Amino acid sequence: MGYYPQALEYYTLGLELALEEDDQEQQCYGYINIANLHLILEAPEVSLGHLNNLRPLAEELNNPSILAYMHLNLGRTFLALERYSEALDALHQALEIRILTGNRNGQSVCKRYLGDVYSRVENYPAAQRAYEEAIAFMDFENDQALFSATLNGLARALLQQQEYLRAERFAIRSLEVAQKVSLLRAMEAAETLADIARIQGDFEKTQGYLQSVIDYKDRLFSEDLQLQSNLYRYQLQTAEIQYAKDRQELAFVADKKRLQVTNWSVGGGLLGLLV
Image (cartoon, rainbow, N blue to C red; front, side, top):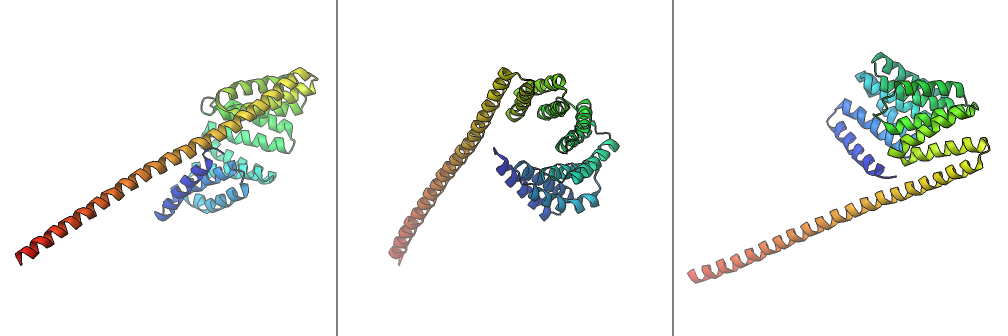
């Protein structure tokens, strides 16, 4: 889960501010970010609600970048909801905008998710083409985790077409990339390699890759616990600092009151003497 709930709170506050200031462009990005986070948090129905709120604003502004992001996230959300025909329509709309604006990396992302949809509906030749085109357009250095996921998608599409040697080659490459940047992507690549080895009857390799999958899962779990622990420790430190500040302020106020009482007493005594 990591810091996603905190990011969601941050983006929600940003959206509220954009609504207060009637900043439509920032409202659009707010809806996009919140929808994306809900998708990551496995709440696609909530994500779709925010994207539906976004649509009239995005269409009114007619900003190509915002429209492309909207359609891309609609495609990803429909994929999560298993509404595959709508997912394909949305992703193709996003792709058309990216082609018109000459955004090659944006085209690559759209093609990667088209590959995911085609894989889900078991159209593996179409999935293979989409993944291959995504890799051809991709800026590898821009997002290594995405690159790894696309390589693994291609490996699985080839696996389903019984092209085991090519599938293994791309899965190994996916694992090599993922080991530098993403435990989750590394785990997915190891799962693919285990499937390839099992189908080929290499049970020693299968066992080795399955052990890697377990190890990656354990590390992911520990990493998430550490993130939560660090967050709790930070919150505790913040609370302690605030407590110390409150104590200092309370002491300052108490000293000020004592000083006022002392001055009043002295002043009252002098006045009595003068009378």
